[in-house]
Image (cartoon, rainbow, N blue to C red; front, top):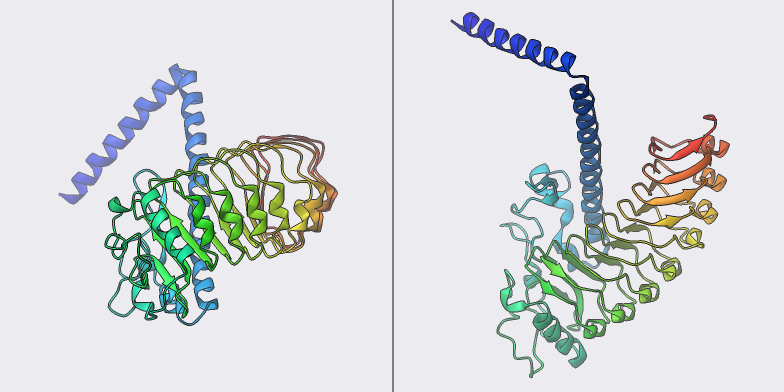
Length: 388
């Protein structure tokens, strides 16, 4: 019986293939269209894999950061999730986005929930009060971001905006021993609105994580007041407006993740004033303009992802000064001109994606100096000449 079923199935497959072959043979255009579609699917697949790769890298980075900071915050203990694919791995949703699974122990909406780990709120055992300016900023934030409709607004919803009070039970906040807000974390918590200018009064903040919410409007200029922030995670929020030039005042910044939003304007030149910046990701936005000419001043930068925008102009020659660079994603923009010879100075570079631009000229011989290069994409450009 099993053999008969197998033969029947095989016969159906062979018959279908013969029908398809006859159709293609009689209509050459069909073959071309089919090949084009396959090519498109392959490209989309590659992009999906890149997005998954970037998300997994961010997760790893967050775990390392949690281990680095103060003992209280380290109770978040991302490191326990590092080797558990059920807890730490990004998943694909039906709309093609990568998300982190909402399982026990995962940070979602600003808390860690499991039998063995403490919530953010439980870390706040201090009874000290924040400053009046901080408290007012939190109350402004709650109203401006549609706090009554957050998925979790415990602590916030019962607070009196006119009376200074303890905020240690506010969902999504982590405080230091003096009552100052150090972390603000809202993962998928239905934030919807525009961050008010008073947000810049939270001057003790070190970590901002507001991720995958319905809408966060234009970033306030007062963001530049937050010179202690080392981590700015605001991706997947349908964020609009421009990256404020005041970001250059946030001199403690190490990690900036603004990807998958609707940001416009250019990458502000002030970005190159960030001496500690290591990771900058703004892919899949609507950014335009040219790259800052002194981009090479970011000599601690290891990962630079600006793919999926409409950035124009040349790749600045100063890029060769970015001695720590490991991954350079410049693809899917409108960059033009030659590939600078100085790019051969990036001896630690492992991934170089320049595809889908308008680059011209010949390949620089200095590419041969990139001993650690593992991936190099250049398709869909106007490069001529010989491969060195």
